[in-house]
Length: 87
Image: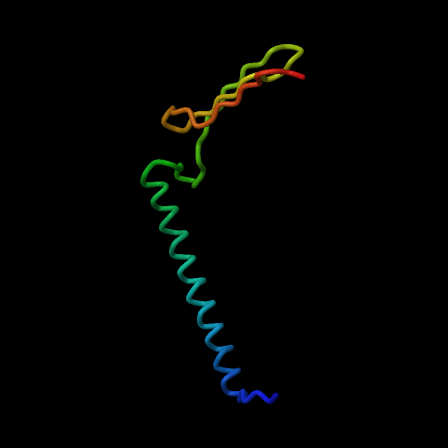
């Protein structure tokens, strides 16, 4: 079986691949910037781009931490971990 694939079509495909990769990189860069701006504007991150979480831990001597409660920067509980039993 013989394939008729001229060299120019291979070069065209390579150029299209490179062009598509550049376009995807530009789009990704713009979207990352938009997401960061939106998170800051909505108050989910601070000016440095970090998500602020406060944590409370209940500690029992000889057992360790039995409860952890995490709050977001607005004071809402975002996570709570409780040790229910020790085997």
